[in-house]
Image (cartoon, rainbow, N blue to C red; front, side, top):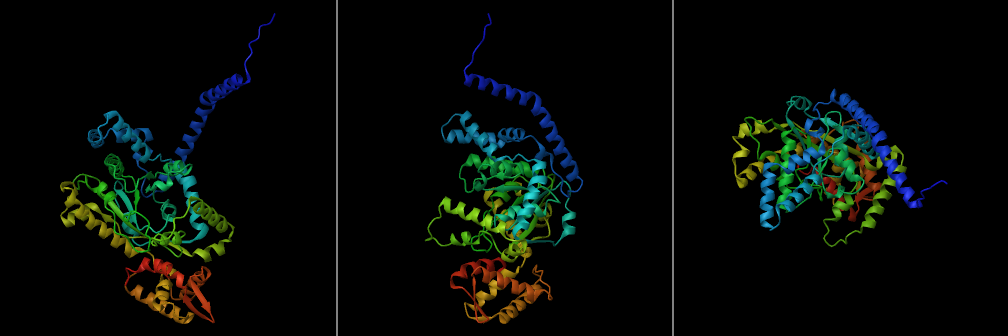
Length: 468
């Protein structure tokens, strides 16, 4: 007589599931991990031979190791004790909060994702809608940066495309680590962004423990030579003009900087400009305090509609609608040289005095950024249209005034890349772009700015208003 053990279907399904997990864990996963490590090593060997600024060991350290290093940092431990005492909570709970903050901040850099997927995605996205131009105004200066220096690209912030554009353009030189806002902490974007070396920042957080964890991460990354990209303005410009620099990130990098024995920190000014900023209407809309708040559904619908319509356009039509996106790199600023020439030692000052010197350096960097922000056709034409104050004007007169402005800017040494032979076509294309967007009205061969377009025209003209 045969004895059988019967199982319900759900029990059999659980057994099969556990067996499948064991097969994956013991047989397939080791092989997959070996394959992925091999692919990553191959990418690392390939890119290391061509990068001007090599990937630092800090970026390749296991993420959990970096989190532990941050949580058990002496200054973080002191901050945990103080936070626990002020909030009357057990040390264990305060330390768990610090660990959660560290886990939120620390990236999970993956060279394969960055240089294979990330670079491809950034290149496709940038070239999808713009004619991309780049100018290295001081390429020799960039090459003179010491190999062990901490390089920090400081740039103006006009669009969320800035992240994509600059990452694409410097991918042949280095891997950038960005500070990104809470907007990027959504699935599946969060994992992708962390794997590309970015770290999340809670804007305007008043939590002292969080600020200390963030400060120490920035300090450790800077000391380790990680190449970073920072927006001194702290956020997107709403009116197109430069914002006052925020000092927090720069202070994190400089407050413990000892020029005698620390590795140099080198700031590279980067100027970014667009003929059309994708989110220009949303940004300028925030200037109107009476404007009703858009719903999440409206934002998502508009975003996906924009992506779909753009993808359906031919490349020629995309370029004619969005024009140029341009990036210029300025002369590097060495912190060691800056401190030596100004008799400054950031590590020796108390907070108020230190912030005064950080502010001076931030102002210098913003001035250097302003000098390399590209002068693009739409900004030029917007200036002229505002000058005419909605008066009907011939296209020839507008082009003549714009041409005079170009000559004046070139005499001032502004970064403008419009040759005399191409001037007519470039200005005509800029006017066509504005007419196509409904920002400029056309009647009987005469042109004038649309009344409702003045805010947008000011937004673009403000990008070069520092060249008055």
